[in-house]
Length: 255
Length: 298
Image (tube, rainbow over all chains, first blue to last red; front, side):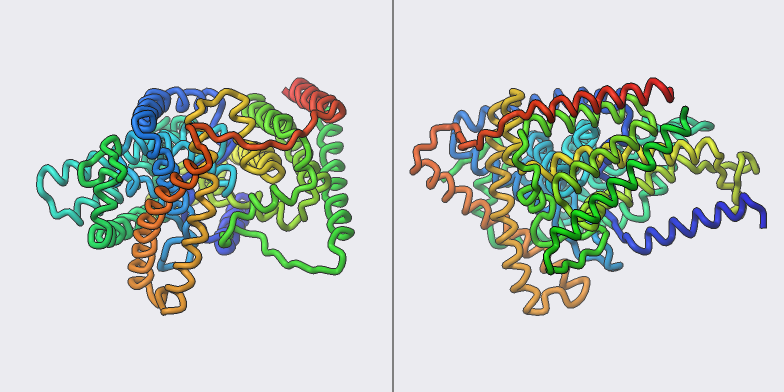
């Protein structure tokens, strides 16, 4: 056996060992320190217009009706808890929902951007998922791009009169997949491949994370449908309160 | 020169580990806790618990948050393996020796992002090609996976950098309760509405967590998690119920706040924690050492 072969086998063995010990599936928060400085700043700046828009929309609602502040806070806490719960999985691994698809369908993407930012800060502080320097990149992929796509698909499905459950499933799972693609792109842009550049690197990151992220997206879709069925059958009045049946949280009317 | 630096860093790492182990031995006083290193989620948040129990909780929160931020920025801006190792050692010293966290618990928190780090760095290190190129290559049917010493080195350095940054962040989170971090953000002039939301959300998280664990227990005792399909229904049911309950609670809490004269601003009583001149001097020296390390090994 050549020396290089030995090394590769050791590497693969170490890899297998580590994954035998840590069966983790929710690995899409970009970790602290992973991105070079310029990318941290760029993604933060890209987020700003969305966040400012979300900030003013929340501010407007709160100044019109101060009671809605506890509602927004509860929604934020709800998204956090949903994203920190261990979801049922076939392999016994430890995985989580992103919860942003559900949030976008229920409360609209504008409110979810600011709440998502806060949730991501708490995930970094309380759960050690993600980080402060990568907050911009994570906010863009999880609190802005994912929810926007989810919401867009949900509205589209409603317009073309697809079965509501199918629409919710597609919205949640495609939103999740889109988050995963955006994160892969963010990683690829920061670490392009030597031959093939960003595209090759993008494909590599997609491939490496696919085994965990694709099943996760499907499970997230199913769970979101189950949650929405449950809510629609037992909580119609609450859903009207949070403006779900009209579409945006801006229409909040508190009793 | 580099050998000397490497040697000194190695010795420091061993010393810190020994100090942490000895410290832990003394503070255990008969009780024995067994903790497995790994990714785990309890019903509560481990990091929050450690933050309240930390011995360096009494340090000024602004100091801790600024130190962590400066180190984070230095880690990624200088992008130097020696700096990363120095930060890693110093943060381990602060958290374990000064903060009194046990080695096992520290490692188990530090290891949370391990899956992402390994997958992410692996994707950087390996390349695919149809021709047998590169320093090391592995033939897989019709294509080759290849890598080189350069790439593997880059991968190791990146892992070091990520761990250094994570340890700087965790020095802060493992010693500063969230309410203090939020108050530092308030002093840094983050918009008032966001601070307000963060303060309330932080409190609601624990209320919802309590609701969740009750629902989960009662579902579990009724065979709610017997197979995958039932688990999905149970999960959906719990999540939906939680939304209803949280909306109800939101109304009730607003009334409770208004009854206590809430007029759009919540002001919390904060413990006064003085800046210690010694700590600031040490921090400045440490940052200077990091710059020197970077300068010598550039």
